[in-house]
Length: 239
Image (cartoon, rainbow, N blue to C red; front, side):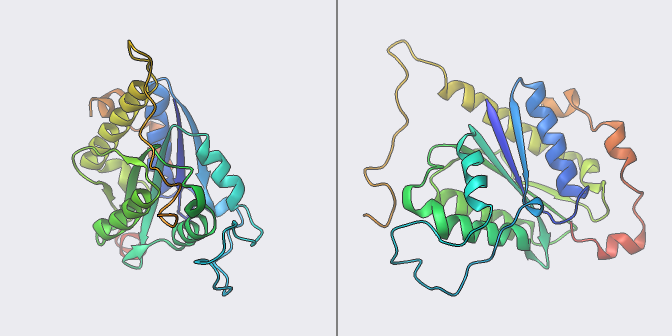
């Protein structure tokens, strides 16, 4: 069981990173493996003005790290997209990644089809649902199997470390990871008559036609890295 986390935060050690690290620890406690992709560490160019996205039949010619990142994602059993709210919308890094990956590569064969997927959003107070819906729609476009906790997995807090104090967010995250792990095991277990393949569309793409929160409390070293909130950084922080 391999989980790949895609973090769209530009801020190393911020709330999004802390939440992803926490989620990875939950996966490890469940016996799974993790691969964390921090988009800020890679070269991801924005879409160019070539304008032939809707007519060409080959992947994008822009040279950057996107193809290698997609190769890592294809190796996963489950994908978790994590992003902060920036300026009442999706963070820039995650936005250009979704555009480059989706328009440039994923639209041809939908290689993420039938992979389990989840969404995590961090932010100070506003627009969590808008960002969550945008990422969710992208995952639906790529034919993943979305797994929820009963509530959108969102974290409220401005200063670094605030997300790990959001108990309701931690509960939702643990529930989502737990369910994703159970689905991954279920899909990988042969039935009495042999495991049936997951349903696949006839066409390759549309163009052709919380108990764990108590088990895994936020570790003291993560909390220690987070300064106490004060009026200044709460007012200006974006994740």
